[in-house]
Image 1 (tube, helix red, strand yellow):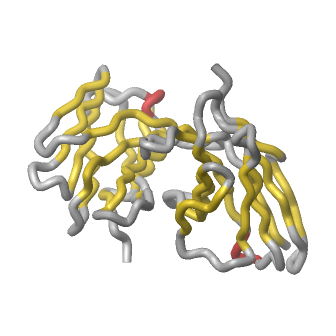
Image 2: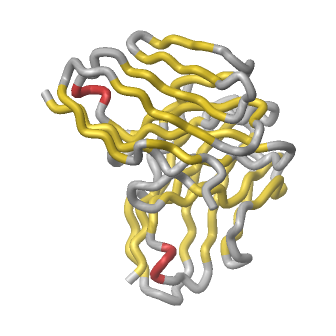
Length: 111
Length: 112
């Protein structure tokens, strides 16, 4: 059972298109993080969302934390080939103290 | 500021052998975590070390063990390697009070 479900698992789009990646759970999280991983490298932290309903922007990337703190989304505007990579959400459910990751969304942006 | 480094980059071992992977944490960080990542999947938490002691463990058998040294560097040891242990092993460092992880580039382990 995957505590953090990401959708879609794979996305292939053309440069300039918009997209949204979802991260859902039945558990409440004190915070959620988003990472991006390129082939042959470790994940790189993009953002941490902490407050229910919070929206954070990082250039063309917009991150939102659900009001109930059980889900999050990542929206990319006008995707570019440099956005290609594996996008991962992660969080600590309840009082487990263990950081868990979603299975990831592989994004391919074609020029 | 020095980032997280891992060695070796790639490793090929035979089933039944033992392996040691090494990690140097980012300067200023006092906590090290290890993850196993299968191709195209998210990392799976193996364990975390703080103050040279294990501080949390995921669903991995005892043949996965680790060490943290006074300079906060760390080792991951895997005994009796199995074919399913083939994966990318990631080390991440952080401050104890934060779950924000700073990852190294990983060690690609292949077990034949």
